[in-house]
Image 1 (cartoon, rainbow, N blue to C red):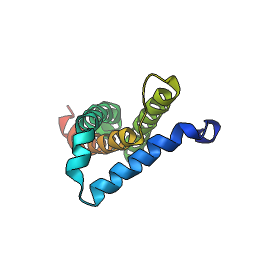
Image 2: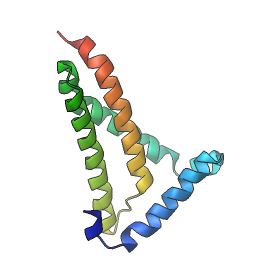
Image 3: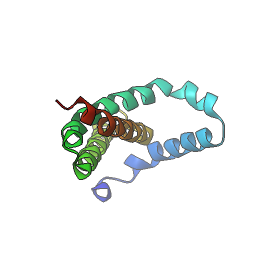
Image 4: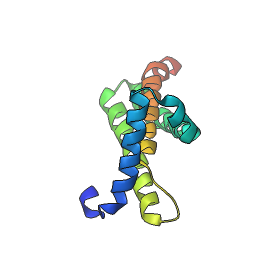
Length: 121
């Protein structure tokens, strides 16, 4: 699907995302945090809640494959949102938002697999 979209659509946001990720890894976290921390936190928290809900049924049933598929679907949903924002023009989709979505989904899926079975009636 990514091959069907124009290359300039991905070039600038991806480069910015790589620079931000490298800055975080190399210890320049204050500068990166000043740029966009709350946006990433919001993405992570909201997608953790989404994964908690989507993975809940499979987690209650003890189906690891179902949890994985629900989590993969949540990450794909986040990717579709970012691509749609890139195509709209008045919104800006960013790769780091997708990374934050994926981290949130992972956290929500882990919580779902740990907590949903305990909430079983």
